[in-house]
Length: 157
Image (tube, rainbow, N blue to C red; front, top):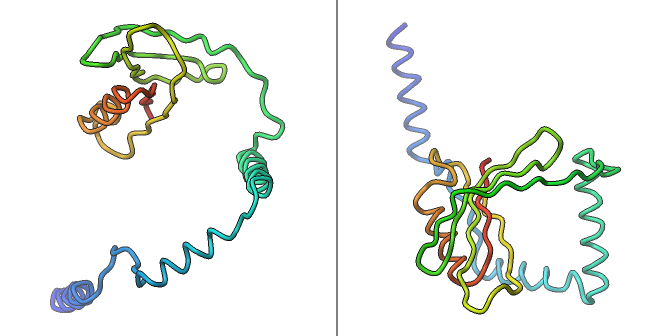
């Protein structure tokens, strides 16, 4: 029995060693350029693009069971522990996105002289790291974006 198991494991390892499981599929550069050019012809007017965006939004909402949309509730935002850093501020934020459901995260804002203005807003999911929004590279990304003038919200997932 052990001999058969050993042979089976050896065969599987040999197979895996000769294949590229997990490698991203590659296409030749020329084919990629042709695909990109063809995609560029998908929409020739702003109206076509807006109609497609509308259909996509409606499909996503319907697929998520959000048609009709639920009644909006006040967010009840609770910011705390604000710190000013080099060119930006960061603070912990909590808000109620839906009755009984809370979203927590860090809000990064640019420090600008001359008061408030319009800022780009960026939602920053952290991916699948163990540290989540507190991972060093996530904090560095958010801080850099805030220094460049964006308001960034890194939320817990």
